[in-house]
Image (tube, rainbow, N blue to C red; front, side, top):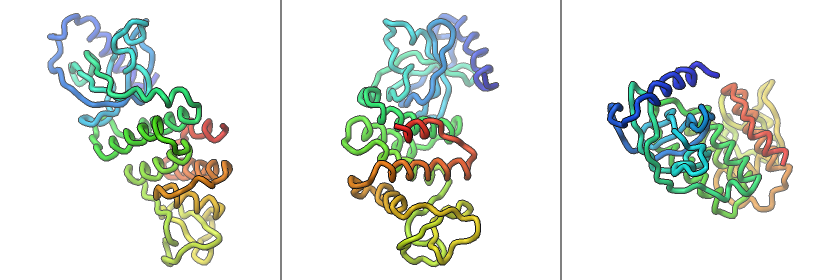
Amino acid sequence: MTKEFAAFYACADEMTRNESIKEFSMVEKVNGITVFTVNYKESDKILTLFTLEKGKITANARGVRKANAKSRQIGEPFCFAEIMLAEKSGRYTVTEVSVGDYFYPIRTDVKKYYAGACALEFTNAFTQEGLVDSDYFVLLLDFLKNLAYGDADPKTLLVKFLFDAVNENGYSLTLGACGRCGEIIKDRVFLSLKEGFCVCDGCRKTGEREFSFPTYTYLLNAASGEETDGAAEETKNNALKFFGYYILKTTDVDLKCLKSLIEL
């Protein structure tokens, strides 16, 4: 158990002892997406919510594991809802939930599920507690909508999401022309981790890693939202490996769900 969650558990115990909502100093409404959950006590959950108004927050959801709980859906990943929060000493408790979208189709398709889980894992790893980022909130919400109800391949949608997400979170990655000479890359292509761009064979430096040109072409098309229907499954997997490698080497974050998706 992390120190953060241990401290939250202790505060949640104190909140639980206060039976009336009047005990809390403030009740406010947020729009949030459930990105991570931990079971707590017999029927509660501790939620990590990414919200439009407050960024990432942690909240106690009482009784949501009960079969007849009205707010049960907020205790599951991917749930997008309007949430009433009671606050005391900087800690939150969910008091009321109005679900906007449960994104049910994500839960019935294994590729969609792992693609969505990867986006939530990224969100939990890279968003900071209490830091508002409305652009990233819209990016994540649009991704979940397209994943649940669109016809595009889940892996391609995730590649597009990861490209936008790393750039939104300050880890700039450029996939266009060679980052050094500015020429269009036509055959061999290499990645400069230090500078966050691709380079051609003539500009590459020692230690810069080569990846396949078909993967590079697919990455370009997926990132720009262009047609990728003809891409081989191996190429899609290589593109996901590309992002796994880039994220690991630049941030030291290893996305576990990404590996599960690649294996499908």
